[in-house]
Length: 125
Image 1 (cartoon, rainbow, N blue to C red):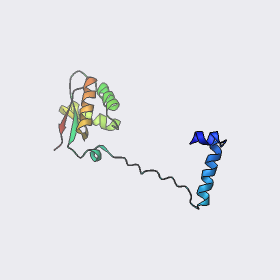
Image 2: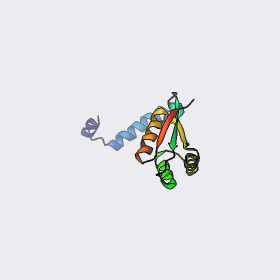
Image 3: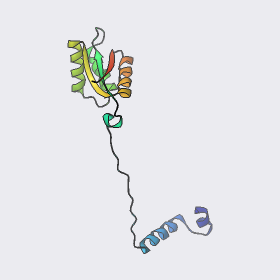
Image 4: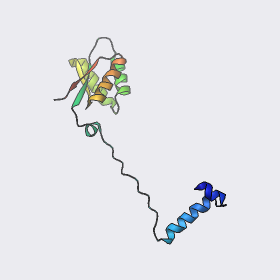
């Protein structure tokens, strides 16, 4: 169609003007409707079972290293929550990092383990 208009000597700008004029002649104003965007969290996107991600205390990693790994790997984890998980693991042997869907939990465990911190996930009751 652009080739036909161009061949007839009509520019793209004049085609746009004529399109607007046609809309105005009909008495209709052009309306652009954008689809509503919905943000879903993990529990809303997958109604499956939720999993708890834990870190396990070990005598090898420093507290600073564990904090660094948790903050880098787990999306949206605050320093305070990472610190609580690390200290709970240090004092009781294991610390809860987050609760999420299975796929995300397994991804976090793999990433945490790759950084030398012992981690596991278990289904939530």
